[in-house]
Length: 254
Image 1 (spheres, rainbow, N blue to C red):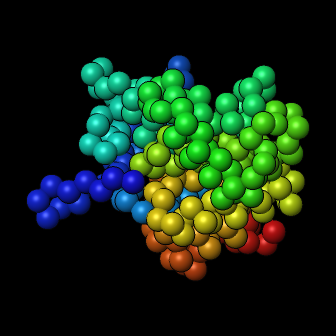
Image 2: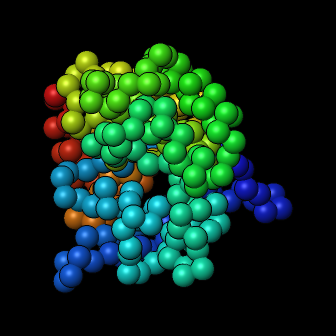
């Protein structure tokens, strides 16, 4: 994680300014603005179809937006001069569906990008990968294939793969939505450890207990609009909008 400072002013790791996005004639993001500072854990929540995952994917250029701007460590995502491949090396992304290469070993899945994209030394990258696997409870799994692992284990490998690039920020797009409760706990425990280590994280999740425990701020969205952007405790204790109050009341019943 790289701190950026200009004089005495700290520049946020991510800045989102008035972002609009359409799919055809349907607007899915409307004037979205926020920023994420180094070491912050921001949780994005809201009902299905509210634009949460779309906003997350705009941060690393997986989705193009038509209005506004997003910057990562001062580099503008929407600029034609921005090298998105290089930028994505600094923005780790963990998806719902793992996205591992089924024909490659776990070690090869983790080391492919650092070696091929970042041009790092193979021995060094492999040593880092093995250390990271040990950290997430998967020591000795490096020569297995993804199909030999449970869903929770595969998602932990996906997290390690992102971490192996030494990202400035980690993005999580509902990383436990495809997992059963036991596997969900495995993955959330790893994410909790990352938060404790000061990793900058933006997390789209329906796991509100986890969000309340780990998050610093909550971004609550509905119909592509950011309804609330507030401290985590304030959001769960006393949301300011009627829509957020109804959402919190509903999710905390489960």
